[in-house]
Length: 429
Image (cartoon, rainbow, N blue to C red; front, side, top):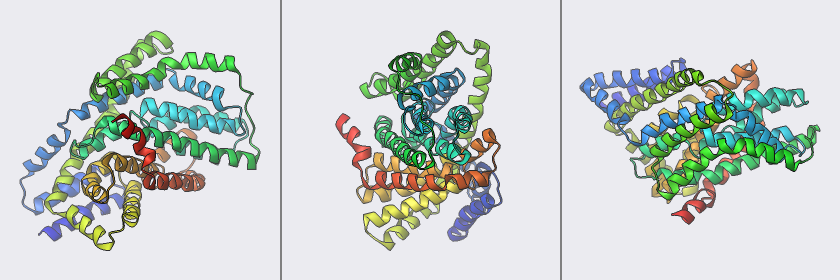
């Protein structure tokens, strides 16, 4: 029965995904069918859904999402673009560098690649095309740089990972672990963009103007303080990640509606509706994925996967290659939140058994799944970019090909140079 149940669960899920059934419904349907076949009371599934959502750490997610939505709607993206332009716009391919740096700043506020593309991309893609950049390059650098939002704190996906790891991983350590890799990824993309710009003779921006930099920094500093408030509060222990998220929302409301005042206070209802839609989708996926993961454990599938991987080799380098391949493949076909819930209990024990710190592995997972967000067939960021540019998915995927190579290079560095993720963590803790 366990063997057939395993095929029903995993095979049914893969079949439904291939038939383009939404991931949440594919997970839920395959879980229900397997539970009924195994003659397990359906109330156990409901219990696991509730248990998966009953976590104090998860309370931070709605606040981080809402803070990002408020700041994104209130004009912070325009200010961050101007700040980035004042800092790096003078180099060859200046707008490409602005795109990378702007995503770095905005990722620290929203924590969402999709929000980054829809906000920063909506401004810069059109600006880059008017300035003579190829459309493929403009969209490619926009999507590739958006992954920084998964690494640079505060990332709500890091919170989901901490929960999936059984609460044994500190959220503050995860935030600090992703900081340097996120910045490094932005720098790698900027170096790549520079060489492409030199080869294609893309234009330079205006020369560095200190007065313009000061005015741009002055306009942006209140928005960027959101990141500072969260990090300083969590690191010093003044408040928890959940409390810092709530304070971030309060600060975002003050800055957006009473300082910037680009949108009226009545716009809060539309922002709340958009945040609620995002939150409902994430929480539903987390809940149903928790039930799916419980059935996986009941069928001892994680043990079988661990035995299979460790049975192939005991070489840590090869094991990490295998786990990266698995995460990259699954990231192409599954929603990120559900994949974190399901894959973490399976792969984290393997990683720790070969000496990988849970914080380091969390950063590796975020990087892998970030690449999955810009890779078909599921690629959520691809769909967002297609929506704002009206370009077909096939063309966007083709535009991403050189950037895939750059991102894989970054993934290799993050995987095999632990100091990139762990130096700041070790210094602070």
